[in-house]
Length: 113
Length: 113
Image (cartoon, rainbow over all chains, first blue to last red; front, side, top):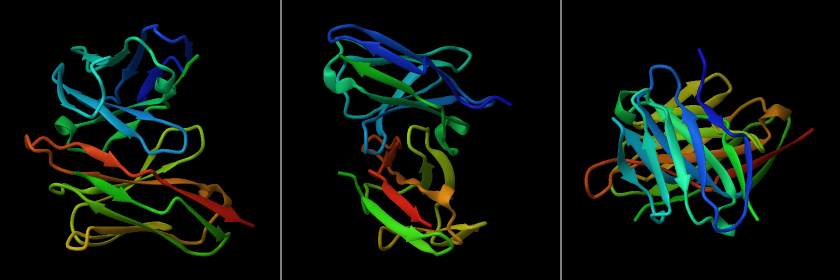
């Protein structure tokens, strides 16, 4: 049984560019949450998707957007990249519409130059 | 607002016991999680408390007091591989009655031989 998977593993972009990160949830999970984790900090909640809709959102600008597909996989898009967007981006999936425990993917390390 | 506090760093000796504390202030409470995160890796689930008391799972135990907004993670018979960051996370309630999981900044635990 595959766990949560994310792609790519690492990514290097320049300021102003756009990036798309992908996540496939653990089998049987219907909810996907995205987090940004800066070095030495805890994960910061970006948003959560359930039934292909954004259900909750943290304190992130509209440059951060997402999508969930019918197979429950999800994408995180970030437009107009800033140097401060450099971080580890974590995807976590859970069952029972998000009420069950979250399990994290390995993350995507984004570096903005 | 929501706030989660835990010590930044702790040091303990192999074979000993260590207690990592977490205090929280959230608008509503729907459970508290502990995650372990090794450097450069994704967080892995350790425990979940929703009722007061102690939950024991092998060498790890987690305690919750909802009235005090307090939890701790207890690690026994410490091993070198326990060197990691330990994240406290609380599921709260937002004004619109949705819930989201908020993470603390993590406690970096160093194990000495």
